[in-house]
Image (cartoon, rainbow, N blue to C red; front, side, top):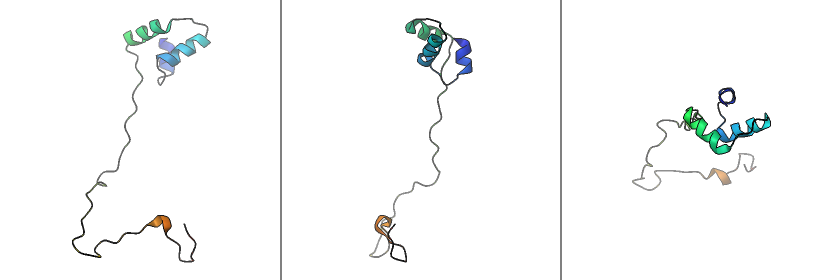
Length: 84
């Protein structure tokens, strides 16, 4: 079990159980889980998604008419008249 866990670091106890069964080693899943936990073999967690810093800022409230212009690019057209 340790050899398979060291070889496949992203495998948890369930996938190791399947690998051992394919190699012909029969073991109860509950026993394998207990041994996996006792050996402190844990799947390393992946890091969170990295977000760009400084992109979140509150929307400015326009204080007079025609201060903020916005464009609905979904329904816009190119200079030759083709839609994109």
